[in-house]
Every structure is written in C-alpha cells, then in structure tokens.
Image: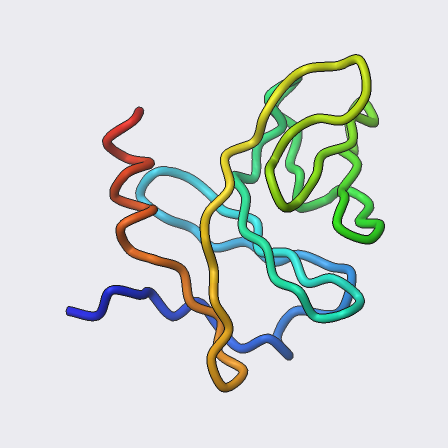
Length: 112
C-alpha cells in the first residue's frame, strides 16, 4: 500500500479556492492559493463548527464564513485575540497530483 493517498490534481481546484475530501473521520478542506501552494485542514472551525472550505481565502490565510475568525493555512492557528486551532495535514504535489500522507489520517483517527 502506498504511503500517500492521491486526492486529485492541482488543476481540479481553482486558485484561491477549496475542495472537500471526505474521509472516515470527517471532511478535509484542500486549499489552493493564488501561487499554487496546497494546504489541507479539517473543514470545521473550532469556534462554531463552520465549514472553513466556504471561507474567504487571502494569501496563506482563510476567514471563517460564520464569524470572521482568520486562520493561517500553514499552521491552522487563529489570528488575533481569538484562540483556536484547526488541525492541518501534510500534503505534497508530485507531477500535478495532490497527495496526503496516510499516516497523518491514521494519527488523526487515533487522536479522536
């Protein structure tokens, strides 16, 4: 079995947009920035559970669509006075294919 799970091609996600990947543990939001960086985060804001994939992306940040909390796509950390973290997952892009490490999904399931 491969150490990585193929989740699609980079061109399947428009720049400054997100797509969902459904897993046994819930949905993961895959973000593509304007400069083609790819990030993966749980699709659930820790504040009110809003779908972070529906947020407004600006650079390496995303704003929750429900209450305007701003999160760093690199770390999942909320910015400003508010505290909260969204779980992130390591991703790679190889020859245009987005891959997520299976071990990170296994660790997330074990942590719940």
